[in-house]
Image (tube, rainbow, N blue to C red):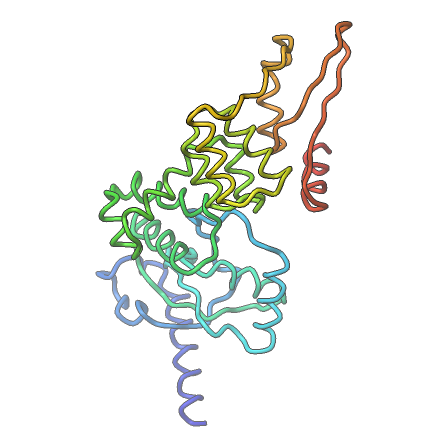
Length: 293
């Protein structure tokens, strides 16, 4: 019991130190040695969301489940923050941060680090890639940022994230897919395996045609690979192109990209037409409905 009280007293002392010394931003600053590496309770209002967070989507149901666990057991694994003047920036642990706010907690245990923006970016990207259930496109974008902004080679990146270089390459290649396919992968309509098969299709139009066939016929990865192979060797006839007025052709790709699906358009000889928007589930329908509001 005495040991627990001593730990709590230490936490209060560090909290006061951090509050009173807003100039601790490098290891050379006064009292930095008392702050760096410490785990203390920090007010949630004093924490800024990490601007370099690679995750762009947080599942609400999963957050509620985490919030329930935190309410019952507390935050078992502290978040990591970067000291920045009088505030703190999240380096990792945004799900724990969001879940804690969700249940009305005022403070959260945090591990204190000092890092410049580049180090912060690298820590955030690597930590998220290794620990979080990112979708394949988020992983690929994180890899791309590490290469472009931290100036890593693919070989260095593979060592940094603990993956084979071929694995890193396969993720990066996904970014060459048509944006609609990337959206489909992020929404879970197709897997990374489907995406890897479709990379071998040069034409964006052919990629989209096969993508629609995958969704329509619920093709497996193996079936998709076979379809791509047949297309490559000319054993599958390509669908005839629809003749559409130029004003429709010019705007069709923008509409498809915005909705995340390739829309179908039919036009009569009198100029009247119809736009058909496919959806694949109730969630997909709700997503499209919200976009059209």
